[in-house]
Length: 483
Image (cartoon, rainbow, N blue to C red; front, side, top):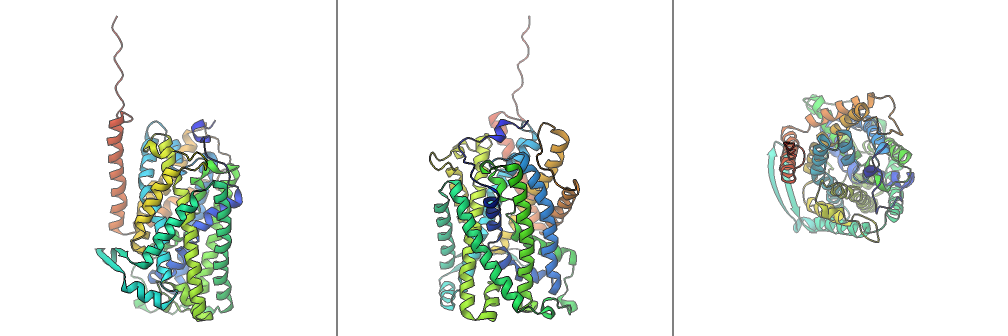
């Protein structure tokens, strides 16, 4: 039977059903991602081949969604992957290390993901009016450092970035509510997000030109020198746009009937966004030739609406996209705030963060920690955030979690599996191959950053374990007394 430490987390309110869970997943997914990455994907994959990034990445997230679904149904608890790794690899030994490394990297990658939404919102704000764009550029300062050819780390301070910062503070204010109220807010955000996506898809369908969308005339100099690497880079951007299909797993301790709610809300979210994002891509590239579209990296959707309806539509969709980013960051901050809380409850993080608010029943101190780190990343450039996010998360979350599930099935017959993935082990194999391919295509610098993050985390774990005299530095047993 399941350990009481996993199944019960006192103080948390179970207020999320299937619809609220699905809304929380989708509102995090449909933020900046699809609208910000279409021009970037076209920069790697020319013409009609750019659609492959969305479709192949879609196969990967559906396969990975089954891994999340099986683990989430079996081990529903605040913290998600933290508990999956702890239980899969053994609570007393290797599970401690894997869980610690996950918390270590999620404190970087989680806020990176949410912060990217605030960065994109700031970027979209500059296309509302030309006057605001000019004023923002006149009062903004950027510092950049090249880390490898065509990749730079940049920090920008200016009016639009402070607007993104203000949005983050407002999200923090809204998250100080009971989880059932947060679920209702997510449903409202989901409705608004579908309206934005629907406007783009319908507008694109009415003006769709197959000759533009499926332009097969690609000059030799426009073809990527290494199609496999280009596909990987494009897939990485698509995966970034899809991130969040698993968000409900971090709120597992607040879900009603998790054995059904968690897996089916994940799969529904994954399938819905793969279809929607593919349609959004076709809507835009079916109206704007791909050679032009890849140059509108600041806000391709605003340019799309300008061409269809005029400047008023471009300004309106920019405002709506900022709202979509807001909804995404809201869901992301909500989910990731539960990870330090769960780790602190089990003694794998500072105990101070295990506190639950006495009346709202939310982990408010953990929420403040994640919110602070999100606000910090909101001043960095978007492309760096996306690549760093993928590189730091793949090994310790997606790959480790998949291996953990395989190991759990073989070694933990005491853990009930109320929902099992279809066609096991095929989804696991697809996931391992896909995530490994994406990690390689992030580039040497970010591969090193990802590996170095884990090595540093392992060193911190060893120092902490030695200080607390826990595995692998357990005190030696006293020799038996002589008679």
